[in-house]
Length: 440
Image (cartoon, rainbow, N blue to C red; front, side, top):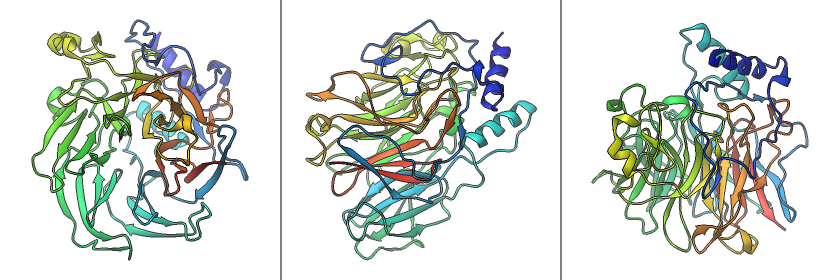
């Protein structure tokens, strides 16, 4: 029965009879897997849905939709899989361009899945592996000039600049380069490798984000798991499914928190100073399991993966191995929907945003593949009060999947930051654009 279901989902994703896939809207605002106390159905270990969307590109003149009072424009276009961004002190924006590198299929099933991934935009030829600098010369919200700052990297993702040094998180380690934002001069021939990391990972877990803490004394590094649920052995998960902490020169490395299957977005709440992260949860135990989430992160905390989920709910595939860790697992703060691929996380700051958005969390959801009905494919917003989630999740930027019945996407949101004037910038890695969302 599970194999039949799996084949049906693959046929649907290939563009054959689409009535096999239910057509509920991709952007859920209520239902299971959402909020501070999500409804959690019983796990189904036979769940093997593969329902990939199909990337068709943005029609001329089309753009995402934002709430009333906001304007959406193209900050930059014709990029090559833009993933992550960093705002420099000059107001220029750095963007990491990289993507999953396809592996040669070993079986007919692998080949079918690769075709689906290629159509969805998940994999598409060699990764560009570069950092591009974008400059809005005249302040009109459009990057008129661009220049490639670094090439020949290894799936770069996270970016930080501090004290004359640019930090770049490749999939296999963190590099830093002497860089002057004012002159745009970088010494590309003199990188210092400050940290080695285990490379690659299950289903896009190659992404490594980096962020300095509020006082700049420590650098934090996210590392996703090598597997879905430890199926290759936990010895391969050393320093993975974790947030690492290091000094700016790479010294004094330690695991800050673990049991976080694939953390990406990192930000510190502007009122409380607490670290928060966005986490992709596990696959293949149900359409509505397990919810992706955003959560505050405790120093030394364990968040369940792979032995349990949402605190001490045991995963039937792994729970018997470490009942002690199941009991110790911390429940996350807020569920943002199952299989949404929630990657970007940024708290709203500054007077350029209307008051209700200040201090709330913007969450970029790249979109599902392991769910019968599509979920994600939007920039969502979670309202906060006094440093805690305080209301239902909301649509903020939609239109990436205009018709879930067809399963076609114009683009997929990944990263979110604010620019020098407080507008939101959102990377769209399959649409090859950066969108700018400004109030007024």
